[in-house]
Image (cartoon, rainbow, N blue to C red; front, side, top):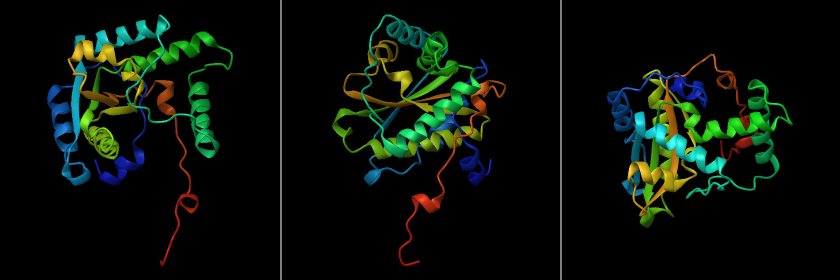
Length: 221
C-alpha cells in the first residue's frame, strides 16, 4: 500500500472478524515498525503480542474486574480532564460513535456493553501491548508514539486494521498474570489488531481533522 494512502485512510477499527492473525504477519509488522525513530536511538519500547487463549483470558479478566466494580487504574494516563476545543473534539467523536451503534443518551445497558467491548480489545483476535522500562518512563512517551503509529500503518499493508487504545490494559494485574510482564515494566499503550469487519457500524466513523489554517503558523515562508 502506498504510504500516503495509508496515512490518509488509517482509522480506528472497533469491530473485527474472528479470523486469527498469522504470527508471521505480526512478526513482520513489528520488525518493520522497529525502524520508527526514537530519542538518541534508545528504542525503549518492548512489545508483547497476545492472541488465542491468552487474549481471551485477558478479556475475561478485565471485564470481570470492571463488572465487580474495580475502578480502572492504568499505569499510563494519556488524556485526563480535557477542556475547551480538545474536549469538543472528543465529544464529537463520541456522539458519532454512539449514533452509529444506536446507543441512546439514557441507554445505560448499551453504554456499559460498549465499555466492556473496549476492555475486550474490541473483540480483536490479537493485541500488541507496548511497555517501557521504569528507568525510561519519563523520556519514552514520544518514542512509544512513533512506534505505535508505525505499527498501525504497517498493519494496513497486510490487510489488517488496528485500534490504538489504553482501555485494554487498564487492569495491569490482569495483563501481568497472563503475560508475565514484570513490575519493572510500565504498561504504556496497546493496539487491538485484526481483519476489519467493515459491516460493523462503528467502523464507519469518519473522524474530522482541523484545517492546517487553524493548526499551523508560518514564519518566514
